[in-house]
Structure formats: C-alpha cells, structure tokens
Amino acid sequence: MSGDREHELVLFGATSFVGELTAAYLARHAPSGTRIALGGRSRERLEKVRDRLPAPGGDWPLVVADTGDDDALARLAASTTALVTTVGPYAKYGLPVVAACAQAGTHYADLTGEVQFAREAIDRYDGAARESGARIVHACGYDSIPSDLSVLLLHSRVQADGEGELEDVTAVARIRGGVSGGTIDSMRGLADGARADRAVYKLMRAAYGLSPERDAEPDTRQPSDNPAPHQVDGRWVAPFVMASYNTRIVRRSNAIAGYAYGKGLRYGEVMGVGSGPVGAVAAGAVTAGLGAMIGGLATPGVRQVLDRVLPKPGEGPSEKTRENGWFRHDVDATTTTGARYTARVSGSGDPGYAATAVMLGESGLCLALDGERLPTRAGSLTPATAMGPALVERLRNAGHVYDVARA
Image 1 (cartoon, rainbow, N blue to C red):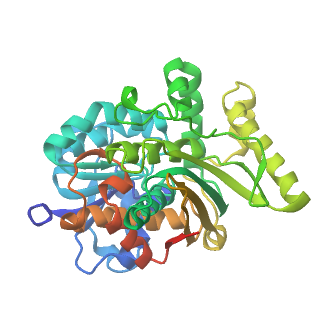
Image 2: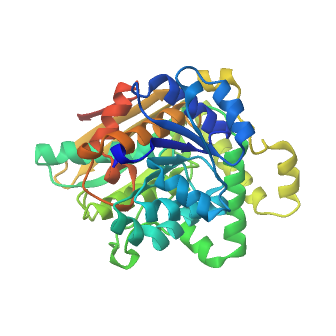
C-alpha cells in the first residue's frame, strides 16, 4: 500500500502538546526518505510547528482537515498508508477519524485512554476495517503499550518453555512525570460520560468492557482496579490510575488471540510507592488523592474549583519535567504449571509525553513501514495483536527496555 499513496505516515493533531513532541521525535528518528506529513485544522499553526522541527521535518507537507469535515477526513485518510492522531478528547473528536481510516483501508493509531470511545469505535468500525484491511489500533502510548507488550512477551516465553498458560499476572508501575491539560480534559470527559449515562458507568466498571464478544468471556474473577494499599514483596503499592484501561486492553488482546494467554488469566496493575513507614503513608495519600480527583471531577461545584487550578488543554509539563521523567513496570507472572516469570519494561522521559512520543512515533512507523512483518490481522486491534514483536523490536532500538526472565 505504501508505494501508491502520497504519504506513508500522517501525524494528525501535530499542533497539540504531545503532537508536537511526536513530530520532533519523527523528524529525528524516522528512516531517511520516509514520506511524512503533518495534519491539523489550522495551516497557520501547522506552519509554526513545522518551522520548529529539526531537518527533515521543516520540509514536510501540511494537510489541513477538521474532524467536523467528513470529506476532508476522507481525502486525508486516502492519502496515506498510516495515520496517527493526538486529537482528543477522543470521545468528542475521534470517531470521524476512525471512520475515515476504516473505510479507506488506512492503518490508524491513537493515544486514547477513554474506554467509552474505544468501545464505540470497536462496535461501529471493526467490520469496515476488516473489509478494507485497515488496522485500527487504540492505546499506542503509555496507555497501554508497556502493559500490552509485557504480557505478550511473557506469553511467548511461557509457550517457548512449555509451561502451560499465564494464570496470575501483576504489574507494579513506578513513574515520574507531569500531567497535561489534554489528559485532564479526557478525565473530565470520562467523568461526564459516567454521570450522564448509566451504560457508560457500567462499561467503565466491567472487567471485560473492551473484549470482542463480552458474552463469550470467562467467569474468571479479575483483580480490583482500586485495591486498598498493601504490600507486594515488602514494598507498598496503591491503585494505579491507568489500571482500569490498561487491564482491559490486555484482556482484549488475549481474546483477539483466541485466549492464547489462557482463559483463566487474571491480570492486574498497581502503583509502587516505596517501602517502610514512608511507603505506607504514600500509599494512603495516593489512594485518597486519586479518589478525591475522580470524585471531584464528577461533582458540580468541586469540578469548577478544580477547573481553575488544573492544567488547561494545550498545556503540559515543562521541558525539565519531561526530560527528568521515567517509567518502569515490574511484572510478576505465574503459569498453570506453577512456573514463575518476571518482565521488566522501562524507559526514560516523562511517561505520558516524552516516552509516549517515542511509543506513538514508533507505532506509526511500524504500521506504515513494517507491513510484511506484522500479524495478518485487520480490524479494531491492540498494540500486541496489530504489531506485536515488530513494535517490541522498534521500541528496544529506541532505548526502551523489554526483558523477560524465568524467576
């Protein structure tokens, strides 16, 4: 496909906070000669972003399209092999972009952590994408690539060793980074959707809410997304804000793969906060703070106060915060034979921004350039089921760590 389209990759939403970071990453690291274009609704803002890019980004073409203009989106999608989009909140702006790519046979990647958007996109456009050959891939940033690929690698190692299937898998995430206005805006959308629609509220609480056929899922009881503070291997852990989305992506991957990981898979995520009395206090504080944030965004009055102090859309962490950030996931797994394995995934840079720009950029390049190396699937997929080992290799080459060992 890449040879008969004007572009190999379009970055749509290049003027957003993370969009510009992704554009800079692609300018520095895309293979020489890759046909990349920048897309958005304002030519003037796109030109300003392009002017700040290192070579060869300064020569990339610009494509103007608005998410409210179906004809422009159709032309945009038809012009490229793959499209990555940072235009959010996705529940508000994302569905027309998915539709255009699904109908044009254009591979698609986004950064969404919005479960109701992903569910609607799956239900509405999986069939069209299967017919056209498009890979529609949600969650191609820190939500949820480390989670999805670490479990894929554990599964591959367990299968190679002949140790049955995955049974209990727990990821302990440790991060340092900031928060952007775009992330807060997505959280507002989740809170508004859950408050306005009981079905959205139930979806957000459903352990298999993103699975292809929810009625076909096993009765396996899954770990809580909001556990009380407790200790894992002597260190205190608390609820992880991304667990409720990441875990559903992993379970969707398992289902798409025909439950290759195991129908009895129990997968959970927590946040590591330290050891000893200090860790205990931190775990309590994180638990209380997360509950207060979610509850506050869903409560009129409190919401207005938070809106005045939280970052606005387009705002994000400083360059120093982005450079000093990092993430690390330590994943413990037990198989049906009783064998134990560990995985470690880590990377430098603020996980939601600097590291996410690497993940989204490499996902886009993978979809655009690595077609013959990718799993032979189309439709609404996940990073593991759409790109799998090819994306792992790209991220390792970009400096991220993806290791698996027998415990």
